[in-house]
Length: 327
Image (cartoon, rainbow, N blue to C red; front, side):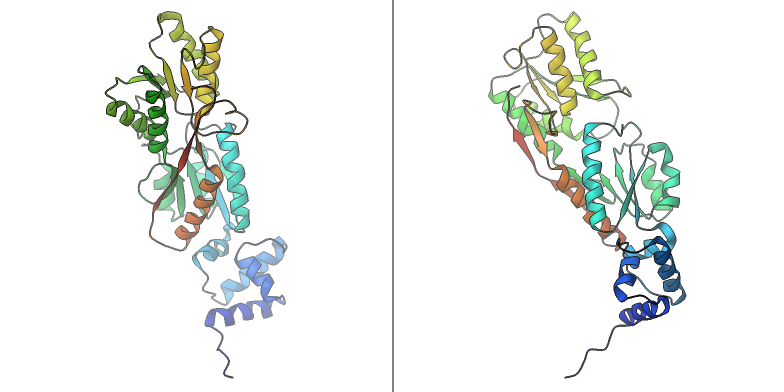
């Protein structure tokens, strides 16, 4: 039987293995960022791969360039790494990246210019309209994926508009007519996809919008919403709203606490809803569930496509309405 002739790439990998005096499996681990070999051996194999002019895949090129499959997870300017949402997202991203032989490291927004020197790819969180990070990474030819609204390049996000539309409709169907949306810096010109879902449902029902725009504070969202709503409750009697649609679970929890401290019944007097369905925090809260594990997995899949030079795309993942005690 005629045997298939090994490809040039396969033959080169065998040559690397012969020169390094290791198995082909060890060469594969080194070129693909897999665990199971020492750093010294990995460096030796990568050095030999350059000497023999090995033509690797796009992902392996990042390794051979000396960045060791490092993926920078970059926070937005106003993001706090200790927020429960980011802790959970980072945990899932870490698992998904490790499964692909990649190593995640955290970058604060003010470390953006260090990222191209220390990482071969990036995942961006919390992008805003004035965000400089995409430009910095494109200039350095660093592939990246955004977790956020559709735009230029690769991105993934939950279907925020649909989620807020569904939860606002749920409140309208209950007979709520004075529904306010609670979110951060709603007056800042940038995409507010969750606000858009609320606005769509309110417009269809011919109801007037109420926007409670919270100032940015470098503290927990729950504390910020608690303080802000307390100030409103000091001056408004009767209540100007019978339901609060909050952009996150954390904001919703602060609102529930402020209402209960004033002996305002939830949900009898005011219904409160959130978004995210964070474990433990969202217990008892009517909210919109996004699949954070699926977002992390899709981010890594898109990153592999970016490394391979494929055409950019946006992926919108489905969400689900979760009805509990606060509505």
